[in-house]
Amino acid sequence: MPDIAEHELSISRIIDAAPEKVFKVWADPELLIQWWAPLPYQTSQAVIDLRPGGAFNTTMHAPTGEVYENLGVFLDVVPNRRLVFTDAFREGWIPGGRPFMTGYVTFEDAGSGATKYVARALHWTAEDRRTHEEMGFEEGWNAAADQMDALLQRL
Image (cartoon, rainbow, N blue to C red; front, side, top):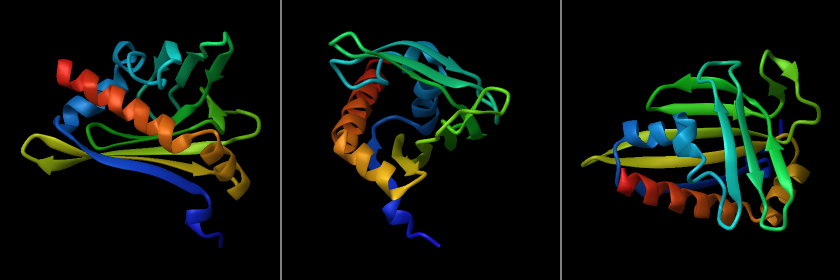
């Protein structure tokens, strides 16, 4: 059995917003596109169907003009507590080609209206994990979380 650490990357932090608010900025496409891609990247579209097998698709644009379509589905949805999604399938449980990762996001009540936010990327191979790390996982996912936090403070 492989060691999970060989496949996992994660970030965590305390966010000064209730779990319900943090979940909402993940669940509402109009809110998600405001923080999803670390600047200077932009997200132009999000399709969010919050149910197992429902679509979780985003379209990101690089400042150099490249467009990145991220297509996947939700595997698990527990409102205000947890979201699990993957690129292994497309909506309707259609295999998505070579899978890269499964995302596992939790929203835990940290008291005083705050949330312990944990976002994990579980990769299909240790090589995929290394690739994601070299692509700037920690910097990129933390930048997006900073943008999410800033949006939450404005809501």
